[in-house]
Image (cartoon, rainbow, N blue to C red; front, side, top):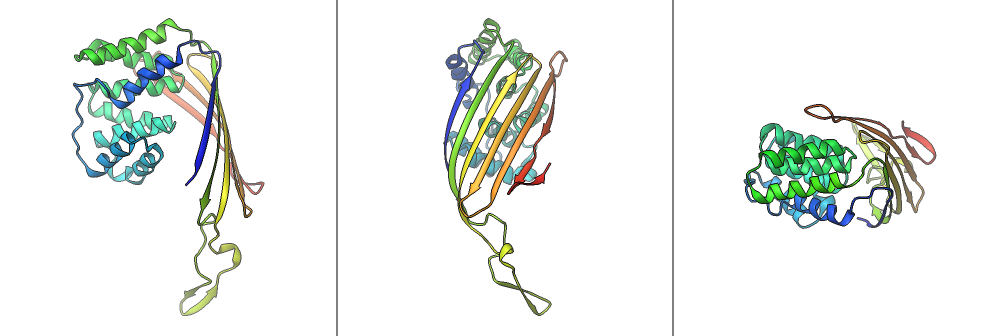
Length: 275
């Protein structure tokens, strides 16, 4: 369990952040979208929605991942999985989840609104505008249409040619088994006690986290994301991860396609554990 502090900064984007944030909040929470009703089809999906409504976004994402394989494809679960992924900034997972909802329910306008919000966070302005335009043209509920019109006006009134955003997070916590070790001194193999070496025994430690992230949208279709993350355990092990992600969207298509290429090496104690 950790405590974190997050500080964000946004550069050349000119649109009013508070206005857009307010309306995106309406989209995510579903306020005013009275013609969209999701039945409580499964207990886990209900618990997932409750965690999100309680603003326990990390717990919601952990719950979603734990039951994804057995519940994936259920409209209620997929929608709330997409909400949770959006709220913890895992936008690729959010896109796939909400696209499954729309594949099953093409006229689910709440899902279209959320998909537009996800695209906007990924820097895909045209795809976001397409989703909200679809809602404006096809929805029947006046509140839904009004929300879509407001978001479209916010986007059309401002320039999104280029912008950057950056954030910094710090935190600390405790890991009771940082090396995935064994909690005993020996194990029995075919009647023989084998002693566990110290390196493979369970280890625990407090740790500090620091993460810095920046995204630059240098065209309406292309963005680059850079992220640095480091975790230092008080009793030794140091983990460092670098992420370089390039995102391209073919937004001129009837169904926009987003391509993402990622390089994410992981170093443990200065040695590459993953390239």
